[in-house]
Length: 191
Image (spheres, rainbow, N blue to C red):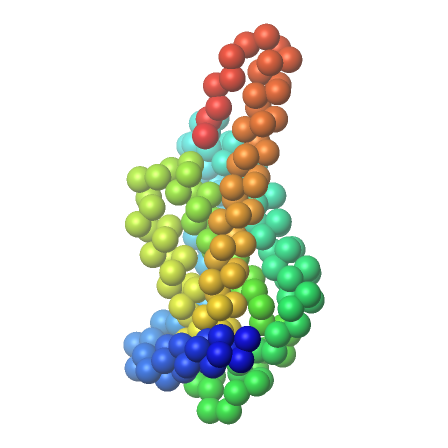
């Protein structure tokens, strides 16, 4: 475990210090602040309901449990289980660009939620994959760059987000097939 922590710390400082520049010093705190993404998410949600047809309404409905699941498992279950101290608290010389965070570090809830959303929309609307994953990678890297997460926190959070998406969509498909069978019709899943 000590070797893994050393590698994680080295990767942390590689991004946190090695990438340091004025553009990232402005961009990464902006990207990492959840409130800055809310207008984008609200607009996307309204578009799903308004112009998305049946598929859009199903996506608007299913994204809620996807994000709730990823957020609550990461923030309320795994952070308490791992109880890992954030690098901005544990390490000296961290290039801090946001306020000091003292909550637990593993996994990154930002990474879990953005990767849950990216994988969800990649399944529903694959033509936008480049946009979803570019945004997700940027948010994940921002958590390291601003000094609040180790790389492994972000990787575990990202994997959790993808697993939550697959679980909710898998459950949806099972339920849709069961409903179709009970009505004596073939299943015609939207996703």
